[in-house]
Amino acid sequence: MNKLEDKEIQKNYETMNKNDNEKIHKRKIIIAIVAIIFICVLGLFSTIFAIINIGNEKIINGVYVGEINLSNLTKEEATEQIQNKINEKISQDLKLKYGEYETSINPSLIETTYDVETIVNEALKVGKNGNIIQNNYSILSTIIKKNKLNINVVINEESITKLLEDIEGNLPGVAKKSDYYIDENQLVITKGVEGILIDKNIVISKIYDNLKDISTNNNYIEIAVYTQKPETIDIEKIHTEICKEPQNAYYTKEPFTLYPEVDGIDFDIEKAKELLNEEKDEYVIELNIKKADITTNDLGEEIFPDILGTFTTKYDVSNKNRTTNLRLATSKINGVVLLPGEEFSYNKVVGERTIAAGYKEAKIYSNGQVIDGLGGGICQISSTLYNAVVFANLDVTVRRNHQFVTSYVREGRDATVVYGSQDFQFKNTRKYPIKIEANVNNGIVRISIRGIKEETEYDISFETKTISTIPYNTTYKDNPSLDEGTEQVIQKGTNGIVTETYKITKLNGAVVSRTFLSKDTYRAMERIVEKGTKKSTDNSQQTSSSEDDIVITTQDIVAPLEPSNEVTEETPLPNSQDIPTDEINNNVVEEGNSNTTVNNNITM
Image (cartoon, rainbow, N blue to C red):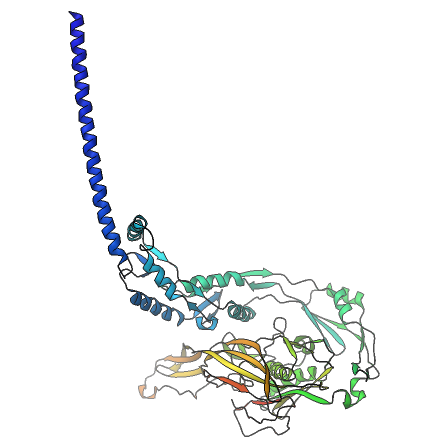
């Protein structure tokens, strides 16, 4: 009885399990069928969606360039929208700040360009350049998360580096290098100053990041700096460099070789070491000078019979301080002789521009404005010398243009100098020695390079090409002493310009070579206008001033030149003492080398 019951129970249990298994199996089949149907439907819709999207000529939803939404835009619409943002971006100056110091750089100064075509094509390809699964995933991901693309921007790093070097010189607390020069019977050593220098790599990286974000109006960039300690003054090295025995000048004819005089120089090195232990900004060490008995001037004019290159500029004789500076600098370089292979350093020869050396306050550039500064005007001497050097077919090794266009030479033809940071240097690459002749007289600065002509001499001229112009901005400042509604122009604005300058070498009228000299960027000088804020009871007296109401004049510094997009070849004038005096605003008189036969007056 019990066994029969157990068998019945077992049978019923097996039957129930069988039924349950059949139900589970049927359920799985149903789920599988539903899943297959769902996948097929999804695949069908995905395929249709992908096919439709591939044929879509618009950018899909969720695609951005920075913060610029390009969703559902055509290629032309996206290009226009991005270009409009770029135009707005590059029209605004980048503001560089360090503490209380602030300056600006226009993006056009550093040749900022954007690759609009590539970024638009990249935006159009989102969700369209993979297989069906990849495209659909990309589309859904873009819609949900947004796809932000970065536009590629290119700047001229050489130009921005030069601009940062200019800015660096104006920073408060900037580091200065130790240096020395000889002033008559004294060795003057200027002690370097610990200070800051711009971390150019970091600042350039910040500029890139700011320019890439074309949707932001925040153009302020903090100037990154680092601390630089000056090198210890090495008096032993200085002693080796300057001390020598006296030597009379002489020359040989076959072959012609000049040996200029060498003045004997020596100083007490032990006393100098004791002096350097004192805390001073400047150390003056007396030199023991023993003059040579015979100088190059005693050898006669046959040593430097020919004028190899000459250049002349004008200056305002009524500006007494500036004239004094011109005469001091000219007296230092006049008579300097360079043997073949020797290099000339303007800062070494002229020395530091100090009150003790006799230099006066005159107009200089500083942070985008014209102000009074010690030694103003000496760059006219270095610029005049630069042109004479090029006309003499010598190699320039160190030279940089000013921040702004000058009035005494054309753009691309100037050479700025700053003692301790920016020098002008050239090398005597000719076969024979050369001599610098320089004088300042009656409103004329004349510098010539004399020597002996070689077997083949070339005609040298300049060619300057304008690459672009940079419009100036206008800055308004409140003046509580002026009546409300009244304006006064403090500084006229001047457009900036980017140029390329070439040296044209000709023989018998035919061009032999066209040598690239420099690519120069001149900043736009802002126009500064003061606006009156003083309340006035008589409204009839409130009138705006004209451009002639200038408080600061810049006739010796700021060029009234409006650059044009053309190439100009400037042929030097023949050597002549006849300097045009009827051109009141013409501060440039070119002469060149003695082979030139074309007379072409240059007016500014």
